Amino acid sequence: MSDEKEGLLDVTILDKKFRVACPENMRPELLNAVAYLDGKMREISDLGKVVTVERIAIMSALNIAHELLTTRLGTGFDINEFKRRIGSMEAAICSSLAEQDELF
Image (cartoon, rainbow, N blue to C red; front, side, top):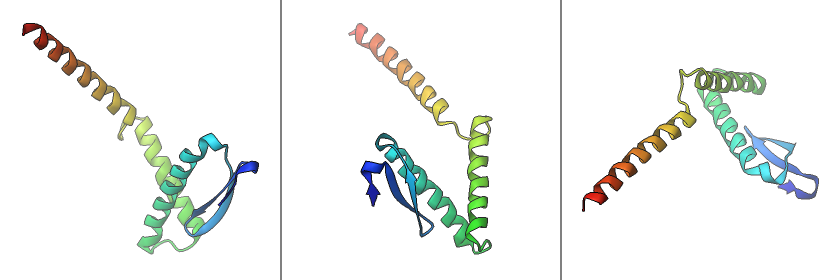
């Protein structure tokens, strides 16, 4: 549940409830972040090697930070570069098709 007039949102991460401040226009992004974090924490929890919630949170934070840094440093998958490359290919295809249309 959420308390909309206060700008608060109740979320659940690893079966623990938290109330966080969140502007209405940022809720979808926050909910995506909550789902991502919850998934990462569950992955670690399901391995059974890390027991306490604090350790699970720290390991999840380290994994997420590693993902972020490898993407920024170019050793991981960069979605923005992927989108630029797809856009470039799309432009090349459209240009080729336009040239072909002129032939007929």
